Amino acid sequence: MRKNSTLKNQDNRAQIVLAAYQLLAEKGYDSATMKEIAGAAGVAPGLIHYYFESKDQLLQEVLIEAGERYVKEVERWCNELTKEQLQEVTFTEPKQRVTSEPEWFRLRCELFALGLRNSNFHNATSLMLSTGRQCIARLVRQIAGEAIANPEAVAAVLLASFDGLALQKLADPEFDLDSAYQVLTQMFVTQLKNQ
Image 1 (cartoon, rainbow, N blue to C red):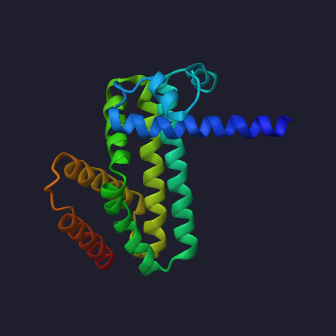
Image 2 (tube, rainbow, N blue to C red; image 1 turned 90 degrees about the vertical axis):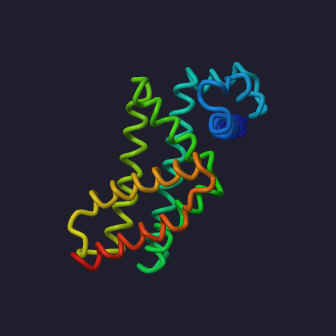
């Protein structure tokens, strides 16, 4: 009986986090209510407060889980792909995500703004950016080997580029994301050749 109860609790929590991700990304942090999130998750509003003390904590959990998924994805890529395939996915995945999962970038942008204004989000924002840089640095090291002396700095520039290009596309649907990514990829390849 306890095992079933534990599984049900994990399922409820996962449903709440998924519903929060969708509603927070769609409506924004200020507009999405805990009651709406509970309704979308198919749980009683009080159950959300059983798992999460506040909407702040829930948003942080949403972002932590998304970060963990990205870490696992990068791990899989590094274990399964050749250097050439890894270089391709490093640049195609964030570009494709802008159109396939724009809500992820909207949520990231909102967290950036909240992290600058609200001290409750400073650590979550810092962790999200640090995790992204670490994952990208791992990709850079695996692609470039010793050809790039400072993969962490390259990762910071790439992460800023991925987020900035996504923001431009979200703000201006006519923005030529493909051309921008072609230039970014060429800059990376040039960096590899010049080291």
